[in-house]
Length: 154
Image (cartoon, rainbow, N blue to C red; front, top):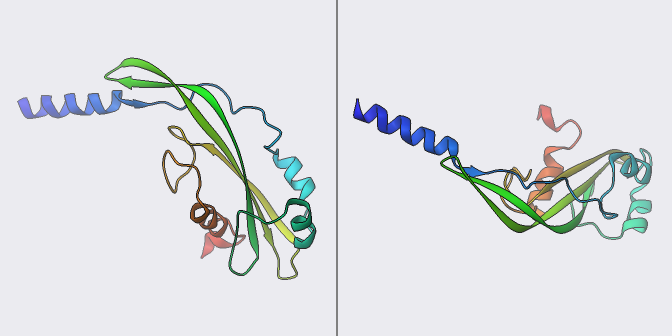
């Protein structure tokens, strides 16, 4: 009986502890694009050469050159709510928001797909490859590969 009570208490404590996502919306920044804007800049059929001329060298590209990504960052002070056994604590900290712009090309070097990956380096930040972390080049490369058109069936 005591073991059940201890287990229930531990489970309750674990459920009641943890950090909540930073409070507030992602900051408005000229560095971040909407999906509509990305699609207009890298419209289907645009050439890889025109993208490189406009934005320069990407953060990362796949070996075959059929996908590449650019990274935008902005840092702001945010409040993070932490619950410790249902007692709230607020902590001011700097949170860096990121936006990865992925562009995929066909065999002729023409855009076939664009995608955005957005998040931050706080709790529940949206980086499945490394929690509390901004995406590294390895993370972005894996994201490009995971989102290659037709990759879901591989």
